[in-house]
Length: 100
Image (cartoon, rainbow, N blue to C red):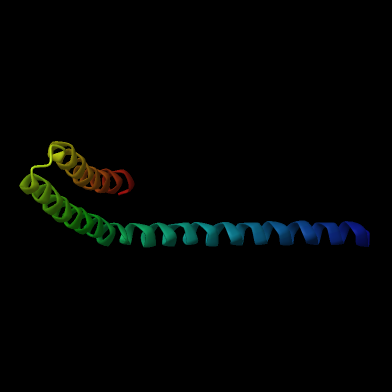
């Protein structure tokens, strides 16, 4: 074998070994990232529920103030705040069930 063929063969063997080594580390990295992302779902879901509770309380106060003042737009405000709270709860539940 001449030197050119030896160098080419050495290069191909090195590239194959590096590729195999990188593939193993890539899978370990993907698995680690998956574990990290799924570990954030419980606190994230609880945070969304807490935000929904705060939005619901603020909405309840706004609707009460409009109702007390006799504003005719009370039902529209109540429906929009209620819809926002329901959306937050449903979105958190669906995202959790979709990704876990």
